[in-house]
Image (tube, rainbow, N blue to C red; front, side, top):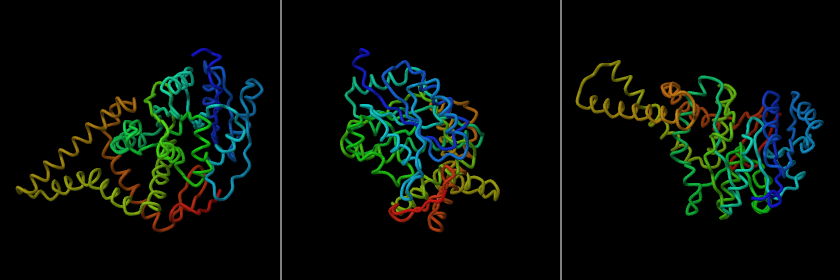
Length: 359
């Protein structure tokens, strides 16, 4: 594609308390080999020096625009409000949304624009390499990713014959016209997982959406610590339970029997040392499930997450974390319905609307 034919792209980066990662993110975007673009970094009511770091970079980089967002309305999720404020300041034919804890390869924007033009797509999302900083997250992520891929495979998103659709928040490039036709972030203002919601809307409206594996182009921090991991799982399940109670309960029961029950039964059989045809058969079945999970997690570690295969052997801990996070999320939904995310507290009500927030 000739330089003159390249569309103008607006890159929107919402940031809340991202002092440790915002510099690397913006520098990776400012060093793109694509030239026809602008970057709009939106400060989402940060309480650290995120805003000051972004503003200091504008002295060197003219294409960087910093927006200090107004406090969000009560019926908006913070990130969604920041993305919407960035959109209002943008002028690109295409809009790229990316998270502030993401680092991009120098040619990622060129590659994405070429793909969207060559394949005549309306939106494209890149599957990143997920970065974990602590051991608990590193042994949990292989289990979670195997489970999620079985239900939300990119192959299903790329199949126009079904309605499975989602975006990765670390990188989704969408035409301005399509973004506006699906209602912008205003149409998903109460969604805690807004990238997934926008992807579903785009797919449901029959726009051409594609997900591409791009672990060598995009690095995204998945969870900063075990507490962040717990909150991330909680924000997935509580809203889902409020909107689809029956299916969420069935999903949690399934997770218990797939991820935790084999270890529980195998441990009981070993401890009580009862030998019978039934217990022997049960032991064989559960041992086979455990070995299968181990193989899947080790393979996922090496070829899917690009981390040491050794972390795959920690899958028993990962299975335990996921199982109890799902159970805890359902109890939380029944009790308070509160979700803590990005230093904000959201109260999720039935149907996910209305809801209250507390900073």
